[in-house]
Length: 81
Image (cartoon, rainbow, N blue to C red; front, top):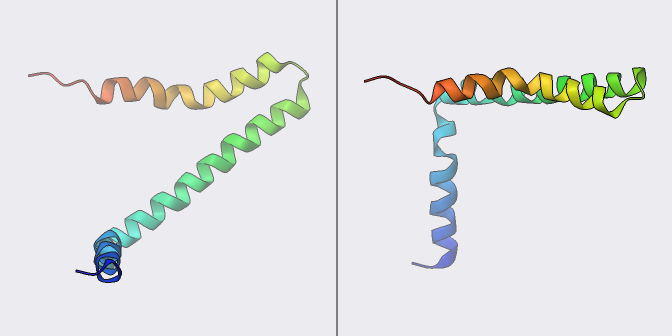
């Protein structure tokens, strides 16, 4: 098999899930949501940096925006038998 044909096969298998309409819709909505979440965390950090001159307050705002996901991810891996 030539490398060109192998590259085409790899690309086809990489993007083949996007042929499914449901998967494509969910994937796109997750990408848009992630972009919005990143813009939100950037905006609150930027706002705190303009309001306060304290580096600690800016760091606390950034940490508090990620703290719920961090705490819940610990419990997401736990399960009882």
